[in-house]
Length: 329
Ligand SMILES: O=C(O)CCC(=O)C(=O)O
Ligand SMILES: [Fe+2]
Image 1: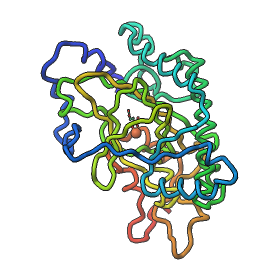
Image 2: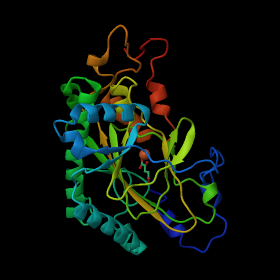
Image 3: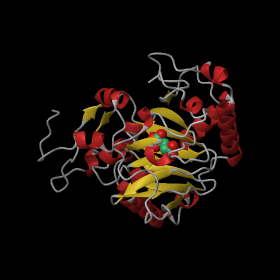
């Protein structure tokens, strides 16, 4: 989608009616909240408490039930320096303020996955230069440590072999999506980011400029999420739902826009490593608990990952074993 990097530019034109191309006719109840969708607070997980010896069992049980029932939480006391986070937010905001010509220097090239435009940024590529490189690099490495700690705790909570989690996610593939959602004169007709679940293990989301718009679908209802100051929003992705054999919930979510203020977010995705296989953890399976999902190579998984259109929980649907039959063998 390298051809449409200009939603930000488009939004600068005086406009009362939005171009057809951006109108979502298939919107489930329009992204503007219905009257009864009160803002609920998603559960909070305190990393410091989790890592404290005595509290561990209680905290782990709490983490476990949150991942099962919600698949999403605010992570506080996460240990990432707030100075670093504030610096990153500032630099992202400054980047989007640059004139188009400047931003276009970072334009995504055909065949590339990184750059200014509508796509993902991948790590480990020397051309990364959006925000000050050092800030983004430090943020990525801090979040990588945090994600590995979270995976370790989840393995404990799931009572699976730690090795099984590590096998899938240690030295895994990370990707980043920075999103800029301009204000829109008809916010009820468009979608910032359409409903989807993340194909990741976990995603760590940071809201950049304090403007809200992130919503989750819980028990069939869209719920707006208010970000706590200094918190990350962490969500379970499809591969963790699969690894946990359906115990953990890869939550469906979307981003809405408003008519007044632009919104920015940065999502870091932690995916399985290339050599791994995606499937339920063997240590969870037994005759009473048969696999609910197929096991596939990450090669197949990534083929899907890069070709997919965001569409609800369609990947998980595809991965489900119907009638106990595994047709991937
Ligand atoms: O911008 C947001 O708040 C959501 C981003 C998101 O869900 C994604 O990038 O997958
Ligand atoms: Fe997402």
